[in-house]
Length: 436
Image (cartoon, rainbow, N blue to C red; front, side, top):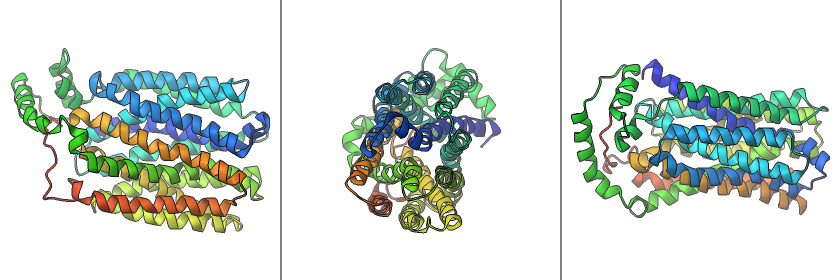
């Protein structure tokens, strides 16, 4: 992979930072927001879920437009929505207004994630795809760590500063992406908009690849027609792997968003100071940055799906170890780093396993719907946790329950083996001539 390809991965990573900052902005300001608006556990869970519902809407309803008008235009629109939503939450006079702003922010983030995941995959070669997606996913941990640092600096002060910081970060991303990010070569080959050949060759030159001709694009399009005859009814033909991928995302995101959304609030109620609880959450975020890259390195050696099975089982075990070790602060923080590494590695794994299941012409919608369905787990996680907590469940009981859900992911991945082109050499993936 050329330096330019890694630059594209870096841009996608930057945008993924926004997801980490966004989710953890709510988590780290949870105690202050709850106090200011007088929220119960279930009401705070609903506030968290508002953003996750928006992400589901953005992933499922906006993602198809990435396959129609392009990855780049959708990202720009989504960044604009995210900017408006973050600034709106910072200025919200009531929890209702804040919930609406969280919904708008979530829609923007959902559109960003559905497109950037595909772009990072399409600009990577097969050997480095796992590593590239691992780096991309590490952006979540970087953004979450940034949110924790801002939140820690504002403990006892104005929690709204965290959301202002997120708004300025999203606005910066909008400007940078508008100037730097190219359209996906795979999309340009597939849709052939006006000036497609010139745009493709300009991008290929930056990637240090040979230029293509109009005739070569025509031959590639002819070859695709046969393959797309098989893939036109992609949902019916790929129903089994699609459902398994959805379940993989649901179970992983359930645990992921539980850990990232509820940890600071639960630890405060377990007796830790607000500063110590934020530090524990920051330990999880720091671990997440390392774990995503660790997954990518492992995926260069072993099949990504197999690596993901190991990460999901270890995540479940370490989640339980974390909550029973927080009474010893240094041990709890150390285990928290491991939990963050493993659960973020699971997200990287899901992002890596998903795209190869779909041909280019439906890759954004395929991954967008997978992300959207995964948000069901993300939405249920904080809401169900809030309801169970109000019913009297302890932090340990909540963590054990979430760990069991994460463990179920491994069963879905075992069943996915016969459908995964990288796991079953005898099962050929849908072929698509591509310049990259």
